[in-house]
Amino acid sequence: MSRLACLGLAGIVVAYTFASALAGPPYVTDDPQPTEFGHYEIYAFTAGTTTMDGTGGQAGFDLNYGGAENLQLTMVVPFAYERPQGGPRVAGFGDLELAAKYKFLHQDDFGFDVAVFPRLFLPTNSNRALGSEHASLFVPIFVQKDWGDWSVFGGFGCTINRGGTSQDFCQTGLVVARRIIPRLQLGVELYHRASDQKDGANSTGIGLAAIYDLSENYHLMASAGPGIQNADATNQASWYMALLFTY
Image 1 (cartoon, helix red, strand yellow):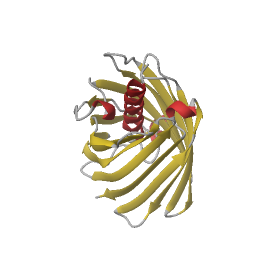
Image 2: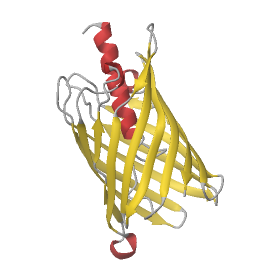
Image 3: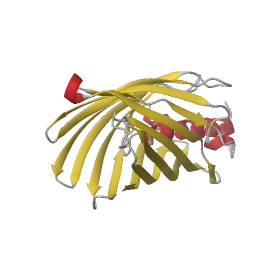
Image 4: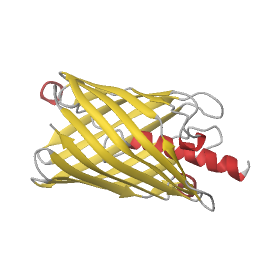
């Protein structure tokens, strides 16, 4: 495979990695909690990943609205960039994300919160290195259990991702988080995803995260961590930062 093709493949991997990362800020793994009915959650975010081929990432807005009881409607509008080793920086719009989260089981009744969160990724075709040439659909299920200041959540899902060198793939993750003080929650995450490319590599990573409530309506969040499987090709280091507005 030529170096140009490798860089293009790396860009697609980064774009799909962050399409997933934006699901449950600041974690790669989501939780089953939808935005409250009639309320909004707006994330102004930036995220990135470094591999042996360079650095890539996204910045933009993750918009969530509580459309009904137990139902969240989501749209993510990203601006993506790719900076290959020894090459020029490329920037443009990334893949648009449309999603709906529905929580159908509750801890008070069932012992766990359980939700589905299908997500559709639509290519903008601003640049082949910044996203896919075809649409894909991610269909996961997420589960959560709380004990006082502790929360454990995670899930599993697969993506229909066909066209060209792409292939269907699955991913899973688990988060353990604890509220340390009333305004601060810390968490640790372990996640794994299969390759979305026929000649790509699977990846596993870990991350540490923090969410700090500046006020009732403004929240800071960040996460960072390395890959622990095929890290040179998929994730030598990843990071995410956001300012969350809730109202």
